[in-house]
Length: 414
Image (cartoon, rainbow, N blue to C red; front, side, top):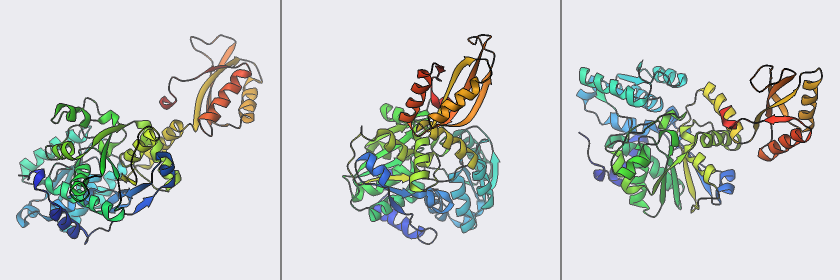
């Protein structure tokens, strides 16, 4: 049976930090000039993406598992995870000599599955979401007596994640605002517990993916409510229902819960890669994405600390997200033009694109369609551009030369 959130003290969080000091090192806190210029206050990045096993999850997993009795350790543990918690539990099991079984969604990123196996865990992939995998993990625990290591909804897990909050206060003692990605709420709740006790005037903001956002509805209702949809690339925070342990902590100690778009996370991932030289997964980029989306419209007292919660990203997903981020940042432009189906038409378009200093990435001839005349051809283009202003100059230039330009309803759909 778990203890109540009110029983988690700073002394217990410090004890967890002492325990963890033997297995992990504090992650870096990096000043980011680009974000600072956009936000209008000093912004620091808490780099949990550089944590052992690639995310903050080892903090809670090791804390929880190290406190099991010898008899419980002998029974083994079971977990459900989209990847980061799986790796944290598997690594903790390897260090503590505990057998680990993990249920992961069938579409869990392959590098996360492989890394979990490499730490010695037994993997079974079931269900489309973390919540569905968790059903199987609970059933296995009941069937075998294995101890369920919940990804967020246990006091020991929250206490372990709270050590990140202690590090933030040690590394940036004058912090005024902390922004944290939010899934089930273990990290946000833990940071809130540590910070509220030691520096109560700090503003704490949670950020969920807007297409998997259970907390705003739950907070409005006053109790956990399942999300109506789960359609985000940020698998690390794709949690459909807040926990009984984490929800009241977030409700009582967090100033606000905001949402970030898929495009916002893509832009943040690309920004962090280009400007901070940091590889971050979509969930890990959620806090930075919200800052980028709201720069200039939301006033934040600085210094601001944005937590980069994880960096375990599938390279194939990274390629797609970088392309998505390039579109969102105005670096890719997709449109079509209709021209006479005569020799030289394509060459003229290519020359005009070159004159506009736009690099052609993809090109496609479309000869048939309900709006294409028999003597016309539609040419679909994807160009590399330098930003929204350059895109507009390219489109204006094409129209000024007499081309019929057809733009997609949303560049992000392509």
